[in-house]
Amino acid sequence: MKHFKLLSAFAAILFIWGLNYIFVETGAKYSPPIWLSFLRAFSGFVGALVLLLAFRTKGNLTLREKLAAFLIGIPGTGIFFSFWIIGEQTVPPGEASVLIYTFPIWTLFLSIPILADRPSALKVGASFLGFAGVALVAGIGTASFTVDLRAIVLLVVSGFSFAVDTVLFKRLFKGEQLLRANVWQLAGASVFLFIWALFSEPIQKIDWTWQLASSIVWIGVLGTAVVYVLWFTLLSRYNAASFTAYAFLVVLVALVASYFIFGERIDGLQLVGVVALVASIYLVSRTSAKPKSTVQQKTGQEVATIESKRDTNDDDHAKS
Image (cartoon, rainbow, N blue to C red; front, side, top):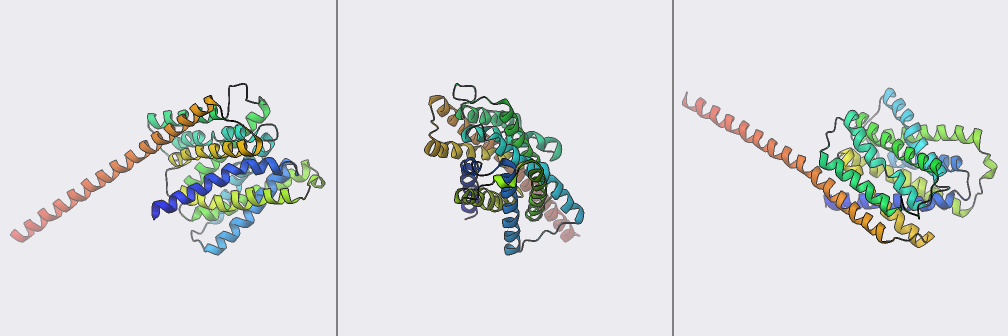
């Protein structure tokens, strides 16, 4: 049952985040990018707050921790959302997803100095293999790739921002504190994006249509409020670098959705990328499982040693 819940939660993350790229593409047709970013962050903030109150989560935060989460939300979510939406105005959803999903690699390397993680050489190599796979799937380096240097930089920085958010949250907050900190970081992102939008884009350019409303519901309520709760819940229980490596699968969801909605096709080279991606996930999961079994074995040996000493002491006591 535990594994079923884990798989269900992660499947929901993959599905919702994968379709985010489609709804961002739709929403950007009816709203300027920074206002759309604000609407996503603010609706996510309201939704996350409602979920927090409904589930009555524990893990109180100090004033300093609230301020830290608020400030992390500016680059971690504010820059993440805005650079993503700006970049996707000129880059197709599938290509945008692969550029943003450099974030598992950023997470892996940021985890070394910040979380003191020590990934094996195999895990590092597997992560790069996974990125190479999604790069092939998205057509990077082929004639089908749309070259827009500014958009590429913005999308890669967007992925880096989310990696910073993930690693800092893992470092500073524990357990259900992550869910409370999530509300504060979304508040920080909302304030930042509102001020940015207010001074850079006329609010009159927002076309309040049902298409825009559906986009906000998907990327804000589902893609931010609901999925962030799932994301940070799972993040509190698993290694950050290993856990985020599986997020490469979001790219496949985005590409399949783009194929059916926008007609993006997958050729033979992209199929090679899919194989590389699957191999990467297998290697990362395999290298993640080894340390756990080693620790369990070591712990078992320590327990056996303690029990052996206890039995010896009992025998000595009985003899005396």
